[in-house]
Image 1 (cartoon, rainbow, N blue to C red):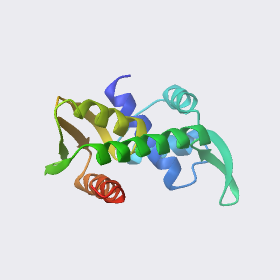
Image 2 (cartoon, rainbow, N blue to C red):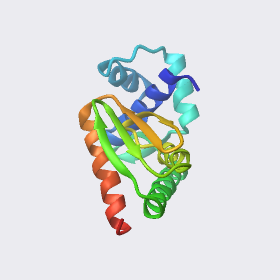
Image 3 (cartoon, helix red, strand yellow):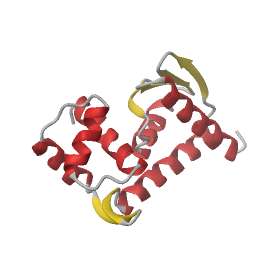
Image 4 (tube, rainbow, N blue to C red):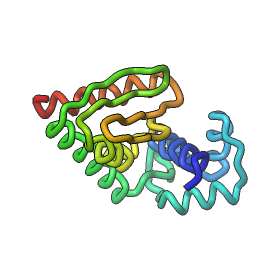
Amino acid sequence: MEVMKQVRQRAIRDLVEQRPIRTQQELAAALRDRGFRTTQATISRDVAELGLVKVSRDGTRAYAIPPRLREADASGEERVRLLMHDVPVELRDAGTLLVLKTLPGSAHPLAAAIDRARWPEVVGSIAGDDTVFLAFGDRGSLGRVRRRLEELSQLTGS
């Protein structure tokens, strides 16, 4: 999947979780507010690929992430927690990158678990042998994920 498509689809997931989005036109306007220029056909494909469903929300029908994807998100986060229990992870901020230093051979499974968790703040990841780079659109997103990782680490007693 191309990078811009991944970023756009993460933005869509974020938007439908934050507020009621009733139509594809509302979704297009919300995406424009975030700097995305896209066509109706692209939005229609994104909605289908993400498997968005309409649910009753705040007295109206609005898009939502389907339960099966929420379960995948939870299982990805659980995998991150387990990995952080098994191996030490040091977190370092670097601008809008979060660098995770771990044991040799542990970076790829950790990055894959974070990707599987589908945290909307994470724009992308790169894993080496003992280092993971997580990219963010802004420092606020980086801070939220850093706190989440620290909390997951504390839950395990690491």
